[in-house]
Length: 413
Image 1 (tube, rainbow, N blue to C red):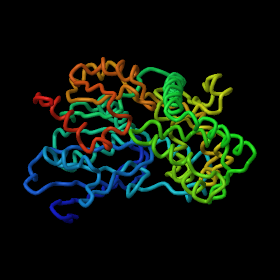
Image 2 (tube, rainbow, N blue to C red):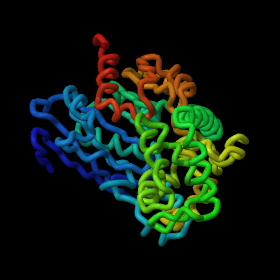
Image 3 (cartoon, rainbow, N blue to C red):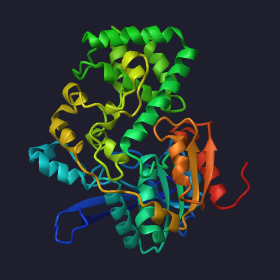
Image 4 (cartoon, helix red, strand yellow):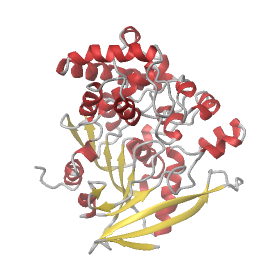
C-alpha cells in the first residue's frame, strides 16, 4: 500500500515471516515496514533505520514538525525504511495477553525477539524488495543489531552508519554495567557541581521514597532504586534540564508526581524494554540481574549517585505495569543467551561506513566501542564530546550528515 504525506511517498509493507530459524517450526509473525521516499528519490538506494530499544517500533514520519528530525538529511541520499522491531508497533506486538500462557512458553517466545530475529526479518524484507545490498542506520540497540547483521550477512550490506551503538563484544554484561556505573558517577557529580543545592534536595526525595511517601498517579509507590534511575536523563543532551526542573518542584505537589511519572524509565514503556533489556548485552551469557549485582559500594552508601539504564529486580514488585511480568522477567534473567557477535566475521566483513562514538556516553561505554571498532577498520569513526547518547536526534541531522560525508569521502566541515 502506498500513501502520500505532503511531499513524501510512504509505501507500507507487511510480511508474514517465520518466528524462528527452525524450518519445522510453523509459527509465524507479521513484520511491518514503511518506506519513505522524497519527490525525485524513487531510484535512490535504501537506508534501513534500526532504532533503539529493545521494544521500540520505528518512528512514524511527519513533516510539520519533521519526524524524525534527521529524516530530511537521510532522504537527500536514500529511501528510508522504517522497520518495526518484531514484537512492537505493527509487527505482531507483544501485549499482556501473552501472559495467559505458561511462563516457559512466554520466555521461549520472547527469546526470538532479540537482534538475531530482527536481522532475519530485515533480510526477508530485503529479498522481498529485490535488492542485492542496502544500507543500515543503527541507533543504540539498532547499532547492536547492525553488528549482528554484519556478523551474519555482511554481503547484504553496502554502508553501515552507527550512532551510539558499537556494543561491547566478548565481554560479560557485568563489565558493561560496571563501566556504565562509572560514567553515571561522573555525570552525577557534574550535575551536583553545577547545581550543588540539588544534592540535598535529592537526598530528601530518597528519604521520602524510603518512607513510601512518593506515590505516582498509577499507584506506584516509588522505590529508591526507581527514583535514582532518573539518572538516565543525564545521558542525553538536554535531559539534565528536565531533571533540574523536576527537582525545583514541591515534592508533595501533583505537578511533581505527574512530571516524575513521565520522566522515570521503563514503567511507561513497552514491557519488552524492561524484560529483555539485559539480554541486549548478553553475548553468549546468562545475565542474572547483572546491573544489580555489580552496583558499586559507593552507590550503596551514597543515595544521591544516580543510575542510568540499570534494571533492578524489585521493580517487578513495585511498578504496576511490570508486576504481571515478574515470573517472565525472573526466568529471562536465567536464560542462557546465544552469542550475537563474531569478531572474526566482523573483521572479514569488509564493512564500510561511519560510526558516531560519544565520548561521554553513559549507556554504551566509549572504551568498549573503540575496542569493537578495531574489528571494523573500514568504518570511519566520528568521536565527539559535543553530543550525548541521543546525538542523532539532538543534532537535528548534523551527526548523520557528518557520517555520510565521512563514509563517502566528502569534505567534512
